[in-house]
Image 1 (cartoon, one colour):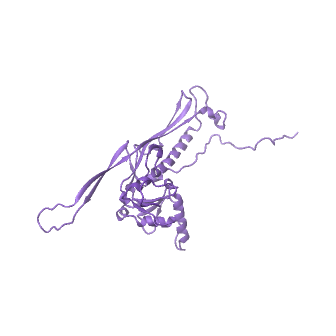
Image 2 (tube, one colour):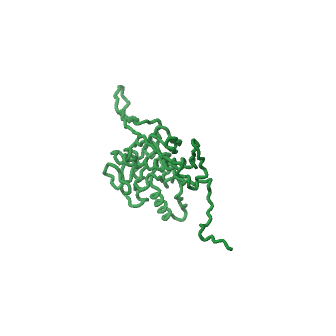
Image 3 (cartoon, one colour):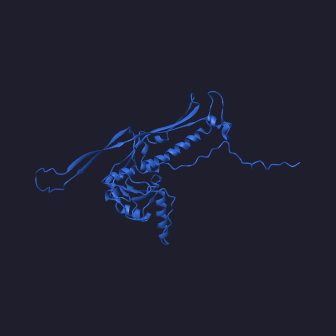
Length: 305
């Protein structure tokens, strides 16, 4: 008598000992702006601006001229937390149940390390977005809102496509900023559009630009780099700034990747927590250029323009 297996599903090999974690890009922006550590709550950014007068020195005497002006700006960080809980009992009837060691005081969470890594990677992704767009729930402004509010920042709106917008931003970069080197931040969508347009217009003796690069040296001026970042995705904004013009403040550098996971015996749950300070500031607004649809208006830039 033949076996009737029509009611059985096809065999699937289950890799019980491996859990695949989705790769997430980290906070790339923080590699290109200044990090200010040891900030708890508020901190001061102190400035000194000196002017001099080149005077006639052929006569004796003393005629002091010029000024040394001290100013101060405040940077504020907010305490941010991520908290999760995992009940090991939810896995009793699932494929991971073979890893459970069920006995009072011996409860384990399968793939604990993988779960922690997946969550810390997701936090990095959200911090990247927060640096530019802020975090409304904790009243934390991002760099875009602060740049828009700064009267000294340079706002341009010329151009309708990625190439024209980038060119308008670069043309507006002040000479003093260029002496330091300038990063032009744009979304990956705008970066790919820029690369595609450049490749389409390039002649036979020019190499094709690879859109997978982490940064692209601007043709004609090696002091300028185009840096695609996920934090600007969906904003429609392009920002040019030297390394020291934009600041990210925190208590401990890379604190957003420091987690604790522990078992709460009373609730019989595994708890996951990350706590860190974070804040941003525009340090030298007159060296920052932003492409925006509304260059004459202040206030928060609108996402998705």
